[in-house]
Length: 630
Image (cartoon, rainbow, N blue to C red; front, top):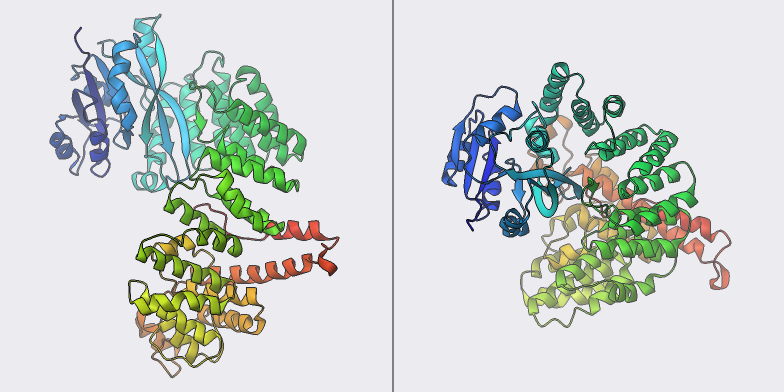
């Protein structure tokens, strides 16, 4: 039997940055590549030709279907795969695609588009889309924008069969930087408004226009468009109906119309009872309306259901880690801390790279007096299969102020045979001891590293100088921060809680606001309130621009200051970073307040004060590291 050939068809314009990745992802998976260039002024056409593509020049006419069809005219394969330059075929799909076309017996195959939004690190959505179909003269795209092929296939063959595969396409085009650079939303809105004028009775145009408005936060306009679309479809046969309902719910949530959103969800679940996303959002709506019992039941039902069937558009983690995390926050708010920890553990088990649940777990256990149980929980409930994973957990423990737990876990790593690794671990432990206010223990870890004169000798020496200074001893060295501290009439530093053991183990130096943060934290932990006050005042002066460079001994007027280079007036590395400095100051104050709350929670004879639950709630609500990307 003759092997069936696959043609990749694309349209591009000024895609030299993304196109190489896309074309590399299909090597070996397709037999020919047809690239329709709609007017590139960069190297897109040249790059396509270098990858063996046939380049078709096409004059852009505000019609994506026309451009797609120009490529189909040149395709000679038995099957058509179509991709955009901001997409890439998953490696597993590259290995599977020929098997699917050989044995499927279908007219078309759906692949799962994984859309990455924001910075691309927050997960994304998963959408099954018809991207692979049999090549035939009557199979031509329709639609000025969001062009479709299924209608043409079904028109030629009313009994056409389609299959949803597990193959994946990665789509990066709606990451924030790419959207802004290409002005995609404005382009899409303009073309969709034109499509609405040309085909006012086509609900699909209104639906897509609503999606674009929702993308930029115009919930009222989006809701209006979705309403028009819903009135024009039969939800039992329209492929995007389930998603239209969910988007209406998201609009109503955005507008704080929670009861309407809940009513819309209940109606939609009658039509789509397997759509986990709706059950997840029902839990969110019930919580917003104050019905915590119904919210918990809905979220538990969502995790029981798991991810929805492949025919549904979904968000990554619905029915698994995202729902578990949402349930954890709900239980935490209900003061069911044990249940919250269990939910967060399940979230991490569902996605091991997920950080926010770990922050919540460690914060809860520290606040509820169970920090000593953290090492056992980590070793029993999580799989730390690599040094990197262990270092990440150590960093989160540090930022959550679970220093004793971090030190206990760190001690398990100290037997590593590598000399360099032992030095890195020594410096990491020193940083933890500094934040704990245990200056002598930190010194014992830093002095051997300094003597060995390795890669970490210089930062270790700098930290030894800083410890000498904070203890009121005479210092003589060239560490810029210590010189500034020495010259100041006050003790000075701030707090940047974003430093981490993982960064230390990787060799990062604690300079500037990070170093000030560690020292402020140590003053809180060791009860050196006078020094802490001095540090806070010094941070305020630095942020107000009242300090000079290390080499200056006289006051400089504002006019002279304007003429100085920024590097010449920095008191220490990173001093001009006012964002980091402000963060240091705020988190240092939170640390101090948190410490006082901890002391208050321990009443006479070691018994908890009757107000302990209130104190615990306050502490859990204090700002702190949460593991989300900023």
